[in-house]
Image 1 (tube, rainbow, N blue to C red):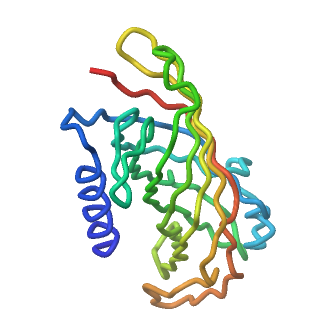
Image 2: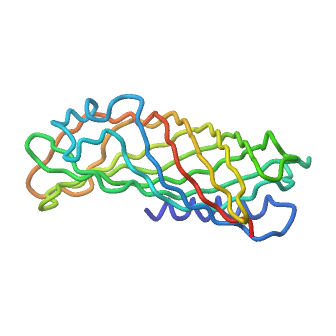
Length: 215
C-alpha cells in the first residue's frame, strides 16, 4: 500500500507539472463495473457468488486536466489532457471449497488523452492510453485465517464520451486493460487454513458512469 501511495504522489506531481496553464484541478467521481476477459468464477473455481453477480463493482475519485496545452519533448500538444484516478473494488463475497471468502482491491490509473471534438463546448469524446496498477485481495470472510493478494500492472486504452450540463460533465468512461503481471497470488497472512488459488488473469474491461465539475 505504501508503494502505491508513493506512486500516486509521483504521478500527481507529473500531472501538475505537465500543465502549461495554472488552473483549478476538477474532481471526478465515478461508479461502475469491472469485467475480466476470462470468467473470474472459472479462474478461481468458485462454487458461485453469494449474490449471483459475475462482475466486480468499482467506485473511485480522480483529478484531471482536459483541453489544456501540455509540453512533451519541448513541443506543445494542443487539446490533450492527463488524468489520474484512484478506485476501490467493493467487497464481493464468494464461495470456494465450502469457505466463505471476500474479494476486495484497488487500482490507480494514469492516462493521457485527446479530445476529438475540441471546438465543441458541450460534448467531449476523449480517447487515450495509459497504465493501471493495483491489486485484488482475498481473505477468509468469517475468521480471517488467511489473506492473499494478486498484484497487477496493465496498459490501458480509454474511450470516454461526456456531455456538459450547466457546470457539470456527465459521462461514460470505458477502459480496456491487458494484464502483464505474473497472475500469481502472494500470501500475506495465514493462521490455520492455507488455500491454494489458481492464477488470476485480470485482462478485461471496465465501464464507469462519471460526474465531474467545470468550475
